[in-house]
Amino acid sequence: MIMYDKILLPIDLNHKQSWEKALPTALNLCQTYQASLHIVTVVPDFGMPLVGGFFPREFAEQAKKNISDGLKAFVAEHVPKGVKVQRIVADGKAYEAILRVARKLDVDLIVMASHKRKRLEDYLLGTNALRVVQQSKRSVMIIR
Image (cartoon, rainbow, N blue to C red; front, side):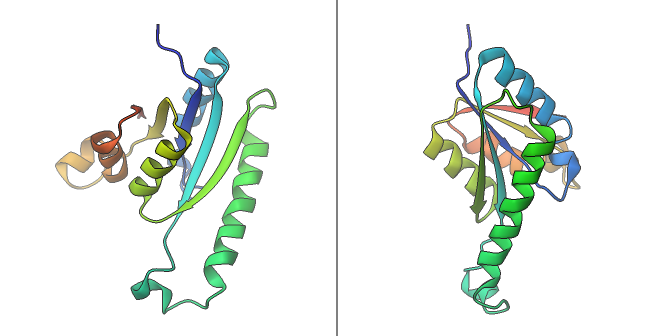
């Protein structure tokens, strides 16, 4: 029988479709298996030389603080009190950050939403979901 101890849920606070269907599934699994939920949201890497030159030095820190505050409010509103939850703000490319966090936390399952894109392979999964599925050593559940 498959059991889960740690479940990772990547979300984009600015796009409801990134969590609208995936969150209930992840919560159900957490409650069923008494697993902990690890919610990650990814901010772009403002430290990159090409990008960083366009923003003030403190911009990245302020952006991470704002996103962290938003994630805290999201959890308070959407995650029941009985679920053990960890909020994570990561930076970089979305799929790389998701995979990095999954490895670091040694999660059992990544639950993520997918949405339609323009290219055929992206249409089936979505760019980040496709890359996570292809590169993850952990189980990945894609929610449509």
